[in-house]
Length: 378
Image 1 (tube, rainbow, N blue to C red):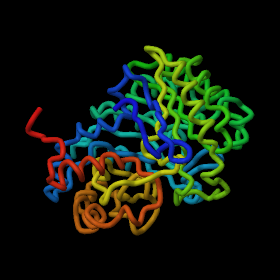
Image 2 (image 1 turned 180 degrees about the vertical axis):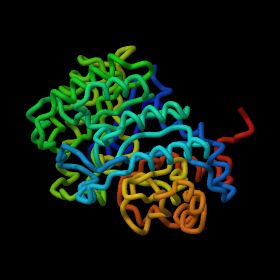
Image 3 (image 1 turned 120 degrees about the horizontal axis):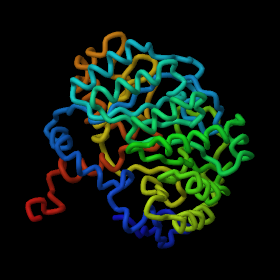
Image 4 (image 1 turned 60 degrees about the horizontal axis):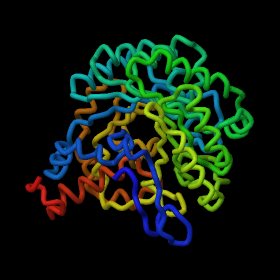
């Protein structure tokens, strides 16, 4: 559904609230959980107790970052300042391509473009025929890097999280607002087929600037404005001053509607709340983490973790990709991995789930064998 009516969700006092997450004419978008049904072949394998080759790899090349975001969910780990060796990442890309991985997202607890050979890595990603994407803070000091992102990436999510320089500095501790905005312009200008998103993580610090930021995103040529609430319970956060009750939910929902009024054929607004409850706190409605194997997380410390949301924790480490990435084959789908996949993992996890909708789809449509949608009757 493009728009959902929630009873007791995403509103005050259990009232029935209508929330628009994207425009009626933009149903088939990357944020719609319908996308998970494209992965039915993987779901079928998981239901047969087979662990599929992941579709996407997340590679975290470095933990270096120029910002000090108050909500950083990697702050607890960034003190280690790990950085992956260039040759090892190149070997890993080669392995992932041969294994059958379809896409790479460059991300990390740090800023991926701060890896000294990021351009080379991105180029090799493209040469191997895997799609490339990036999650970045936009603090890119080399304009050529921003240009190459536009030329080589399928999408770029640039986390600005503010609508003015004043709020940006307050939240991120660095006067790089103009640089990040200019880099969005550069990526857009050089885009071949890159969806460029101005990302806005809603917190008590910036919630008053949702509409201001959305208007700026449109003015500078971004394709998308993407807003969602922050995860205040992530295990990687050091700053615990934020409380869910500090979010003014009623105001935020009104800002959402104002943002949607700015939509056009070439500018889309995504106010992503379907993974959250009525107070904009994250929620889970599945028994097992069946969506996790759709992705593999190549972490900066040389390890592979069970999912993108649980990293740098020993209990979720399933093996080491360093020094030899082919070692992944020795533990992917093996005892510890399967134990986390088919075990009681969701009850141990306290963070927002990136793939929660996929877990639900796999569980209810492929594992439970109840055929709730009458599959054989198109």
